[in-house]
Length: 212
Length: 396
Image 1 (cartoon, rainbow over the protein chains, first blue to last red):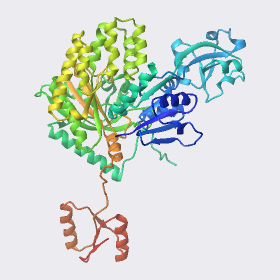
Image 2: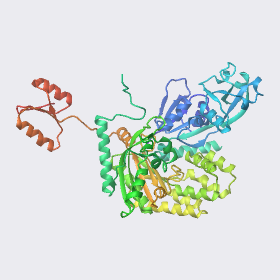
Image 3: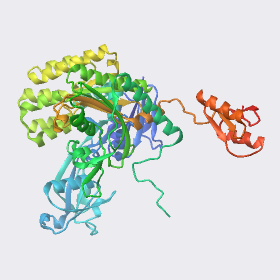
Image 4: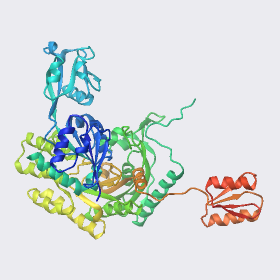
């Protein structure tokens, strides 16, 4: 029997992903610890788990270094990758929004001669502005996007929002929702052909669970 | 200092790697020959318009082009099928049909610098031109399977779909180009949730969207053909396309290759180009398709000859990588014998005879002591030394 390699994202999706896998009978308790290990083998079930940064989950799956992965749709939208995306999973709900400093929320940004947008999601941001036909300079950041407007680095920002608290605490207001996102299961194309039965049965049990 | 780095996406091949590639190509060439295919060697560059006009939009973006010295745009070959279509429709169209042609050609595409994407790579492929039957489909698929088997690929699988089925399901819906793009891109990713959303927003008749919604699930072995027949019952064109696929499957069974093939009716790759069957090959260790092909009955018409055609292209470098991962035979480039080049005629004669028998023999070109020559031969990995005085020394 061939084994399945499944990539899981570190960060906010990890805990609900592990809950889901546990409820399907996978032994994943070792992945919850503070261990620095990145590869965990479950010999009994023929499964290998990888713990990766979310964007790397997509890269590993696209290149076939992992057969499957769990990742947020926000990451998928940002990476434009060539993978199957057969299932959404019932956790990790969030939105990607355009936001501004609260005191400037009433400004009509369309009229701005030049616009700078800070974001961890430069592709999603660019696509949004291109679709609207607005021009903008995008400032790609890796984190701490919330403070960019206050420090004059950008006029607006595009960021992921769960409850909206982080935005509020940083004196920001949502202007518009660009898209919503939740966790998704992704599958490598070659794996889908070569390990069809194993993947199909995993998909089936995940689907049953998700529809509960 | 002159530039010593290579541009992105090209590579030097040398020693064992070059030999492995040449050996693989020879093996493919032999197999294609056994199936009665003849070689075509298209030019490396031609007029841009000729190559770009019929290339898929994605390939067109990636064509390397440059002005000739008289100002006309030239382009490097980005897809051997296009020059072959031009060749057939200008010169070979009145030969007895079908034409069976193969090529082994390097192609040039300006691909995004991602891992394992190269900008110069080699494709080995075939075109079966002038025959539109299910038998022709089956021959092309069977040859693809046979070629991959013959080069020693162990664990591989061809995925077979039919673009005419999806076309038949989309046609009565009369979607705008943008709408059908949305449907296709959801299908392409087997993204059922997105497909559901798109179809709901289009407020289509229930039956029509139900057939489309089942497409991502219609993957697997021949059993899905039965299921599909039920799902498509109300669409005659889709049923006909499906019946054709069943016939192809029966032929693949008879040809003894169906165990290497699985079905996926949700395949939408190359919809703009392919008109019937479409297939991709995958193997253990490589996350991307190592080959792809299908039927493209409209291409030659664009060059003025209305001839059906079907073919495939194998990515030679990807197969080489896969073979290496799967424990390919090692090629040795060490000489078997090192012989001392000297005015002694008898040794020269012996070397000539032994080379004729296929032995790999390297001349030692310097005057040196016996010990120095033994050291040299050892470094070269030889097993024997033939000295000018006629003596032979065997190396452990």
